[in-house]
Length: 483
Ligand code: AMP
Ligand code: ZN
Image (cartoon, rainbow, N blue to C red; front, side):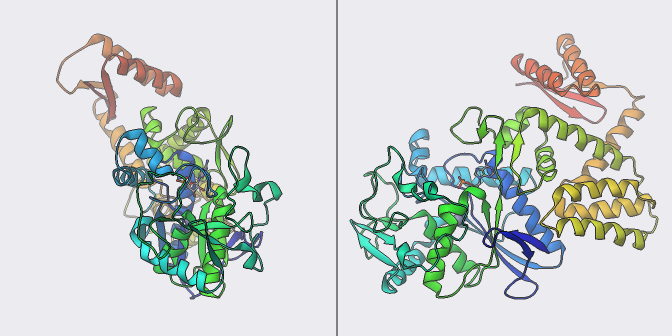
């Protein structure tokens, strides 16, 4: 497989320390709020990468942290503690917040068919490991104690700017306007390994350490967690592009200085999902979550399809219109698959291999998911029997994770039920009651959907909601209930 490596700035053949085996690490979410769909774009593309590696025959050990301590509102060591901010907002304890948003994150992942990593480790669970690493870094002369905190000394490194796409401005992270410079630092890029002198007196979680009661910096958790579960040699490290600096740069600094050898040769960064007015953020405007997509009537897998249509290294613009377009294309694709006839015909092995080769060529070229999606249409057009086409689509879906076969089966059943009822559209209410006004709106919504006017269909759904009515699509009709 050829994969772009942000550490060398080129597309390279992906090689592993142990042939056939991949040790993979992903920076996990900071669990102080729901993940937005931008965060989830990163996890979704990393999921496709993991699934493709497995599909291509690798055995993968994937590790992810859950950041429940140490991440300040600035990615440098400044600002408020994100977890404490979440706890204050909701009048709950930090651990309650962490548990709630960790569960919410995995529930969103499930809806998007993002597989749970083999190892998931909350940062607060490995404090002794970070203390051991920090002690060794001090012993080796890579870290110093100043003003109550332990800092990594970046002047001790032969090379710090691994992902050299930073400029002087980026490097001055600690000296942004309005942020007081930390005068304990010997060099402006030095970063905190262990805090005891928190700027927030009410810092919620603290542990005993040789340097006093305190808490770990954000970067050390990923080094500690990866070294524990991936071992000393990591093959592939992933994250969103904003993680490259300072987070990943600092992870490399600590890990290599601690280990005394190179740590991770291959770095993969997913570009951001943006809105028309810029970068997506949790504090800005409409907070785009998986639940919001569902409320607007979108199947979360339509968002997965939307992401797969673009390359992971290109910034992607989200808009409701773009998502509606993806929904239209996805529905058409499912309808085409539903038109294939499941049968006991034998699978045409030659056709299977030819199609599979095309699919693998796309993905093994820097994970070109948009070409992999095109490969689905190639299957539909290919001169072979339906049994082969369905077998190939099921095979590809192990990587794409779009539930193609299940959705086509459901569409086939729905069509069969509709034709059994003479193509009638049945409206049933959960309580058995009849309501002419509600039924009229449900029929108008059906017509809007038929005409692919999804905005209108959504508006009608919202209108029903304001009337206290929830409508769900069922085979051959719709069901409604009062809420
Ligand atoms: P956080 O929960 O803030 O630690 O971020 C979780 C992951 O989402 C990290 O890998 C980030 O790099 C990534 N990320 C943050 N914002 C975006 C975005 N707008 N688009 C894609 N990925 C993002
Ligand atoms: Zn990390």
